[in-house]
Image (cartoon, rainbow, N blue to C red; front, side):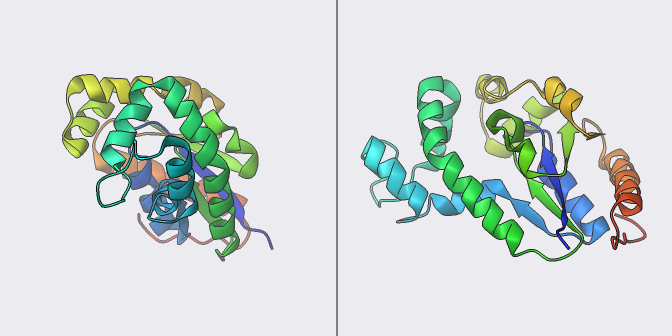
Length: 208
C-alpha cells in the first residue's frame, strides 16, 4: 500500500527540521530531507555541481573545486535573478532525488521536509501539508545564532521566502514553534495522534 506522504515546510529559522525529527520519532516514520538531497546534488561531479559549473563557470566555486556554499547562499538571498536561475536548474533535480528517496521508504507514513514546498508548487506531491510556524523575531534570532550572521542578513534570508503566515493559511496542519520545546512537543504528540486515527497501520509511541 502506498504510504501517506506528509509534507513539512515552514520558513528559514522556523524549526521545521526539529519538528520533523520529533514527529518522525513519535510516529516511527522515516524523514526525507530535500535540503539534504540538494546538498548531495552539489557535491563534486554530482548533477547539481555540473549544472552550476556549466552555467556560472568558476563563480560559485572554491579553489579546490568544491561549491562555495556560503557564498552561493548569500548570493541567492540577495539577488532574485540569480536565485531564479539556480532554482530552475536545481529544483527538477531535487524533485527527482526526493521522489527516488520516498520510493525507497517503507511504512504507512513518510515525512517529507520541503523548505520551499509552496514556492515550487510541490504540494501536489504530498497527501497533506504541515507548516511549522514561528514569529519573525524568533526566526531572526535563530538564524543569527545558527549561522553566525548579522541581523540584516537574517532579515534578508527571511524576506527572500514566501510569507510564513500565508503558508500557514494554506496548510492542513500547523505547529507553532516560537516558544519553548515542551510546548512544541505537546503539539507534535497531538498531531501524531490525529495521524494515527487517520492512517491505517500507523502506531505512535507513548511520547515524542
